[in-house]
Every structure is written in structure tokens, then in C-alpha cells.
Length: 543
Picture (spheres, helix red, strand yellow):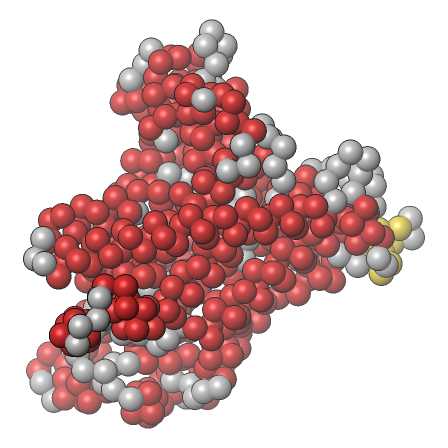
């Protein structure tokens, strides 16, 4: 982003601060709309996810793990696949679909924003569940029973203030902050579910390609500069809140066995079958319904007499258009990009997490917080801005690298780096230094201590971090959409967008987009289910 800001500053002669305060009406409207939508999405996600997590914690295995895995699927679902799923739902509603798509949250937001808000909550629901459920499922119910005997725990308000808020408040605030961040920078959902809605991310993605050119549309470059800095400022505040709340989200009490916790929850309202099963099963159906509809829509072809089922969309996707990218070409290109992304992001994230953990252990808390905050900086920069910054930076420094195959993986690695750090750091904090100290006294060198002590204990977290990085890279849309338009690269997410943008008179274009989305969604969903095998119930919620 610094390279992009430097380029735009040089072209416009306007400082970033001046560009923010001189934003035109379109930029101010985009800022208000993005902030409003993200705030509503954060509130909705917490309100819906908290009761689901409490009911899930009261369930027995294996149903708890199965339903939790289904509810977690949207978290790694590519945003373009989520958009396609809700488009398939609107197609299935027939004549009622356009009516629903016309609903608006407020007049200035534009039609489709109600559906957009539902999609944002769907997309981020598992954040609240994955943070609340592990904390609740390890909380010893004996503490709550003892609290009921004290004056501060004899009322529901008192128990909420002295027990539930310290237990869940920081984690829920972190989940709300992450939801705000993801919704604030959403591109694919806004682009296809509310195409008339202008947010900062849409503005940067659509207008950024014409910015940064000396002597051309200086007003456009000034708009992009102000929008980018305003977006970064809002995200910086959100990320700082998330970072602070995640540090506080530590359950310091003794962890109880799962059976003891479930017996305690079963005795309360969340253990009642009439509440527990509808909440958990309903949330699971809500999570998988749009994904299942994509598969149906890929075989649903429009005819003059109505609709029929066929393989025309799949054939069109595999064959491609004349000179276009086929499904398999995009698949192998996407897999190559994602693999390089993991190879770059995992070592970098491991190094940063190690430095933060080591500084915390040595008492250098100021340095640890500084590095921890810096590792979250990529969350302050949206996908579209990362893509735009990569192009403008290389255009200024090394134009010959614009065709490099490393351009897209480096952009993706920048975006997934905070996720890798956020997964590895809590696992490192739970490590007991006594184990490595004992290994050192036995004469084991640093590499053998790493191979025999540190790596086996951190391997599950490393697998989760690598899998999440791979899944996010497979479905990343914002940076890919900006970069692919200026290079020869191709990804499945961009191919879905390309098919959706084709004229609607061809009855096979929509099924072809659905077919590509099925392949992309199946790969990421399968990867997510495999990750659940490595995920441990942890005192810290986390990703």
C-alpha cells in the first residue's frame, strides 16, 4: 500500500491526509455505506452465533463435531462462491427473487442490501461459533454454581456481568471486529448481490485501474488516494480492537472435562432438546443451503419453455470460449498460486509468531505488542488495495515484473499472513518451556529440539494454518480480480466472475458459472473438513 500511496501522491501532488478530508460526495457515500453494512453484519453475526455456540457446546460427540464442521464451512467459502449461492437461491425463488433482491436496508444503500447483509452474516457466522464454543465447552460449571451462592451471582444480570461477559465478552468483541473487517472489504458479495451499492472496496477495485497515470484523470487518482487511506484508517481501528480483545480472550480458570461441562450446560436452558437441536441443525442448514443450491443450479438450463436439467453448463465450462480460459486451466493455475502462497506465508508467519512469543516470554511486552500489531497490518489493507498497490508499485519500480508469475502469490501471501500468525501464536503461547529445557539438558541441539519437541506439539496448529492459507488463497477474489485484469494469470474465482458477467441471452453462461463455483467450493469445503481433523478444542477460541 505504501508504494501505491507514494505513486498516487506523486501524481496528484496531494497528501494522503488532504485527500481524505477532500473526499468527493461519492467517496463519502461509499465510506458511510461500507461502515453501516459492516456494523450491521458484525452485530447480526454475534447475535446469531452466540446462542448457536452455546447450544453446540451442550451437545455430545460425534454430533457436536459434525454440526460444528458444517457450520464452519462458510468461513473458508470463497466470497464469489457465496455470492453465486445466493444468486442461485434467488433464481429458485422465481418471480419472488427480483422482489427480494430489490429490498434495501436504507434508501441510500441501494437495492439488494438486505440480501447482502444476510450473505455477510452467513459468511461470518462461524467466527462467533468458533470463538465462543471452545471457551464454553472448557469452562468448569462448578465456578458458576459457586457464583450463584454469592450476592453478585443471584440474578441473571449479575451472572452475566461477573461470569458470562468476562468469559465471552472479549472473544465476541474480537469476532465482531473480524466480521466488520471482512464485511468492510467485501467485493464479490457487493458486486453481485447489490450491484448498485457503492462501497470503498468497490470504488477502489473499479476505479483503481485508471489511477496513478501522470497527466490522466488527476481527480480520479485523488479519489482513489483518499478512499484507500480512509479505508486503511477504519480498518486500523478495527484491527487494533481485535488484537486487544484476542489478548484478553484467555480463560484463566481450570479447564473441566467435556462431560462435566455438558452436564452443566444440559441442566440449563441451552441443554433443552427443543432449543438445542433447532438452533444447531438450523444453523447447519443455513450454512450448507446456498452451497447445495449451487450444485443444483449448475445443471439447471433455461429453455424457451422454462427450465430443464442438463450438462450444458458443465460442457461449456470445460470447453471455454474461443480464446477463453477453460475450467481445468483455471484450476491448475489456482492450485499453483495457492501452493506458492502457502510456501511463502507459512515460514513468514511462523517466524513472526515465534518472535512475538519469545518477546512475551522474555518480558519485552512493548516489542511483542508492536510486532504482533505489525503482523496484523495486512488486514488493514483490502484485497483490492493489495492488488492495486502491487501493480502501481511495480509500475514505478520494476515494470518488467508485471508479467511475473510470482506477482499473484506474493499478493495472496500478504493477505493470509495475519491468519497464519493468529493460528500459530496461541498454540505457541500454550507451550511449556520446561519441555525444551529438559531436552536441552539432555544435550539435544536446537534442530533436534525443534524436530522432537517443538514441531510435534505445534504440528496441528501448523496444519490448520497451512490449510487456512491454502483455502483463502484458492478463493481470494479482490486482489486476483485487480491483478488478473492486467496480467495473463487466471484463477477459478475470477473465472466465475467472468462467466457471470457474460450476456444473459446465452442460457449456458449462468450454469457454466455455477459449475466453476461448484469445483471451487468443493475444493475449499473438502479442505475445511480435513482441517477439522487437526483442530483441537482449545482454551483460546481463535480461528
